[in-house]
Structures are given as structure tokens and as C-alpha cells.
Image (cartoon, rainbow, N blue to C red; front, side):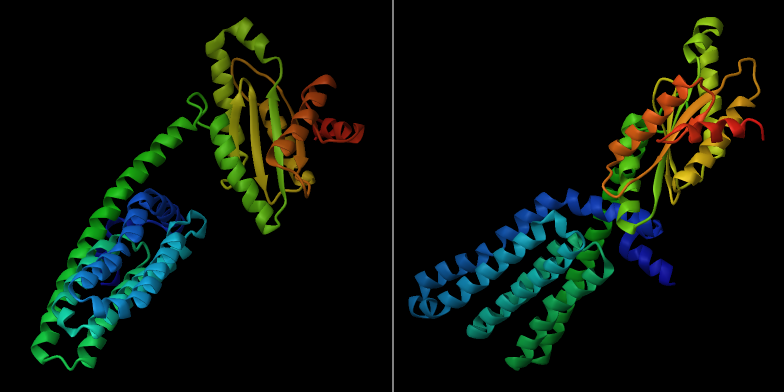
Length: 376
């Protein structure tokens, strides 16, 4: 039953797992930025327009209300600026609730100062609920928006001792407005989800190497950078292994490019089989492969690369080859580019020392360790 209720509120987004839901919310929040900005900056003008109308019709009352309306206008503009800031992330929804609370309080104060406006207050509140609910991504934000709009509404009814029939009328308006807002929110979320998933599939294709089905250079920069920064924030070790097939040009020249492509595909498959799912694997170009290894220090990366080297050497097929590699662990002040550069330098040194070996940044001991792996 709870699942059905969540699906009724959130549409197909209720079926997303927690990680994918967070990513979708980030996308949905950013994609609605322009309309949210126009709304939150435009609505405060209603209070100034209302004051201008009062100034023409009832100038004596308008003078007394000017300070209150100017303060309300400034508060709403300040909250609109917070709602607009992307870096606030999900906290911007809290600013949206505060904005709705200030707007509702403004309507209530205006009505209390002029009870004749009571017949219009519910219309404004219901319209604002319909307009704002689609921007509420989280269910808690959804509930908060409904509360901050309708609690002041009924508080004003109580303060003015409105008849019971008016309470029922306002309640009916509120239920209809919330229903329309929820339906609009659900359809908006489902439409945004369609675009988000299509965008994700397109990005996956653009970031995937079509020959080997591992990430290409663009995919490495996107996924590798994200995982690298996550490891740094969480204080986890992270290392890189850089591989290069030995004498690959000779394979293409002797056996043809079709066989060379087959070797690349087989190597990529083998690397995936020996690599944990949380790692990032890429083919940045040519016959080179990269692996980003979270929770792996240099020794762990060296052992991992040694297993890859041994597996490539033992690989079956009409064309056999070997692989050279270099590994490096991230230092405290490293960027991903610097880390990859050190692993690349170690790989190039392995090539110079005779290929079919794995090296770490440093000295000949690393090379001796790698050659010892050949004997085991």
C-alpha cells in the first residue's frame, strides 16, 4: 500500500534506487531553474502592484501598508536568490519552503488588514500551491509547502471568526488545488525522467568505446574524475594502473587490423574479468588501457596489474601478445591527471626495460618484482 501511495505521488521516479534518484533530482532541479527563477522573482511584484492599486483607491491606507509590503517584497527577493543558487543543492528546496511561507504570511497579513480580501485569499493560495508543488522534488518538501500555505489560511479564518460554510468552501478549494498540483507534479516528474534516462543512455553511448565496450577518453574523464574525487573526500586510497599492449603495430601489420581488433576486445574482456565492479576501466586510445582502483594502495595496484600481465601472456587465440604496465598511488596533493602521468611514466619505463613487465614509480626493485611474477 505504501509503495502504491509513493508511486501515486512520484510516478515512475518511485521505482528508482536511492543513487539514481539523487542523480535524477540534481538533473530535475537544474533543468527547472529558469522557470523557478521567473516564478520566484515575479511573484513578489504582486504585492507591489497591490500596493499601487491601494494607493490609487485608498491612499490613506496605502501609506500605512507601504513599509510592511516593502519588507515583504525584500524578504521574498532574498529568498528567491537562495532558491536560484545551484550550489545549495537540495537545501534550495528548504529555501523554496521558506519562500512559500513568507508569501503565505504576506497574503494573511494583507487579508487581516483588509478583511474584504478574504474572498480572494483562497484563490491566490490555491493557485500558488498548483504552481509550486511541481518544483517540490522531495516528499517532505511537498508536505511542507501544503502546510505553510494552508495553515495561515485557516488561521486567518479563525482570527476573523469566519462562518463554518466558509471553512468548508476553503477546505474544498484546498483539496482540489492540492490534487491538481500533485497531478501536475507527477506528470512533470515522469516527463523529466524520460528526458533524463534518454540523456543517460546517450551519454553512455558517447562515453563508451564501441570496439571494446569499456569507457573511452571522455568516459574516463567523467567517471574517473568523479570516483577519484569521491575517494579523496572520503580519505580512501586510490591508485591507477596504465597498460599498453606490446608490439601491437606488428600484430596489425602481420595479421591485419581485424585480428588486432580481436586482441583489443579480448584484452578488454580479460581486464574486466579481473577488475572489481566499482573500478573504472577505459581505453583512452590505441592499444592502451587504464584502470582506476579505489581502496587500493600501490602494493595492491601492483599485484592487480601483475595478474593482468600474467593473464594476457596466457591468453589463448591465433595471435598472442604481452602487456606492459605502470602503477601509481595518489599522493595527498595529486590530481587525477598527475596520478595518471606517473603511472604512464612507469609504463613507458617498463617498455624501455624490455616489455612484459609491471613497474612502479621508483627504481629497479619494482622491475625485479615484476619479473619474479613470471616465475610463479
